[in-house]
Image 1 (cartoon, rainbow, N blue to C red):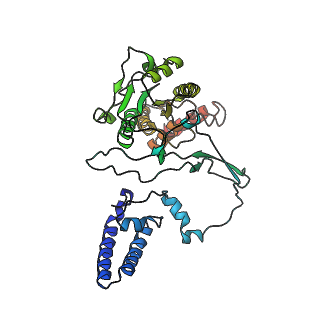
Image 2: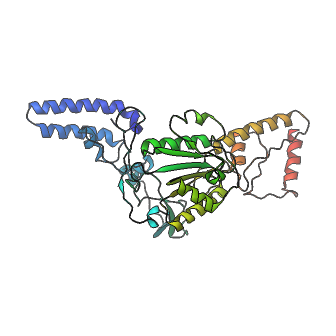
Image 3: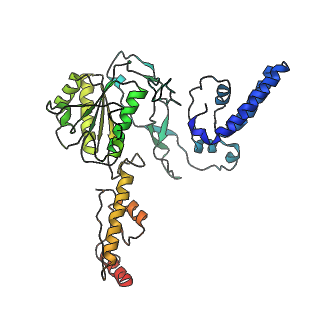
Length: 397
């Protein structure tokens, strides 16, 4: 079957595939099998070529063989490689001579004699053989961070290692025991993240022991707080619940006790869902694990509705926060419109980032003034906040 991402073209592919079979059968009758298959493949390749940039995919799909692992090319990259599009391209004075990348630590740096094995999907959600990965990400794939460039910009760029499933992993079958913990304040989508982690670990990597640590960092080492066994059946429906099924707390960080507990419980992967404070704790745990040379990986999953993480476009929970903020703005507008010279003020979260305020204002389209930390405004004066509010009230009443 063709990849699910090309589903709009499935009917067209089926039609050409039937033509392929007819052409091949006719060629067999005329003892021209090779020429017939080649002609039919060319027809199918022309159709698939509009959707699949790789020339290797069409033959492997036609033969019914296992589809080869290939590097995915996005629709935007495919457009850039189009010959007609290349004719419209002009040279610019922009040059990038050197690209630096941020280092990503790996367990192989402090644990010796690792046994690597091929990364294959271990289980299937349905009865049958696991489908497998569509592609693997290699360690030489990078994403350039500062993509907006000027003519006088530096010729050095900064990149990030691209995330994704690797072709080989250093964990034996049945070796991994994972733990998931949520720390800090609540955020929409926490249970969704937990759900996805459990399903990916269970089905893709065959992990049998997945533990949910209750009540934040303190739950890792305090004996009176029991851990929760997580399985695909136990997490059904939690994505519809608010908060986190594991509970959360601030504080309770005891580095020595946490690492001791991870070793005692034979935890090999720790997933920490939290904000900036929680990630400082995650970094400290990693440093201690590295110092002891334990085969434990620590993964941090950023949790913030403020969307104030510079290297990602949007953090989970942000859209929900904007939606709820829009409701609050609507109530303020209703209140202000019901009295003479009414002024409604809505204060939103965001700390030093105005993403929630700015997006909520754009969504509501009923706000006269939006104040965000990134743009300082004087309170008084000709162009100050008070003067603007006064003039607005005179006009709108």
